[in-house]
Length: 135
Image 1 (tube, helix red, strand yellow):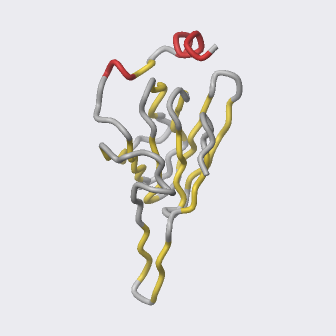
Image 2: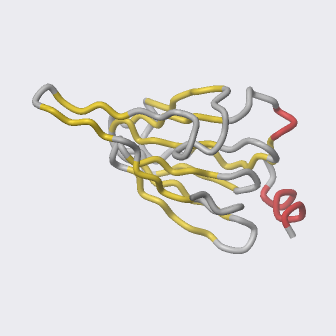
């Protein structure tokens, strides 16, 4: 299901009834890594962006649990944009992929499920250093 080095939008399970909807994520076919950490971004001021880095080892799944935002990815050759606005879609981002999150709607919440604990040494914070590493 998940191609090596490819970002993909995945549809998460959605269980619906008269009481509302329930969506879940679990390690397995829909999450190709063991979950080690979760965090969320919220109250991002208008016009601000988040991210602006890549990871040597970390994989992640981003979900717009509320509102919407755009994820701009760069694999060292091509740039792609992914608009997230449904809580049952997740964007899988493999390791060695530059990411920037922008265009947050008012009240948006971005949930990040990741494969590693926080480790500063895992980050590329300079785009030129990232490009040198992937070329």
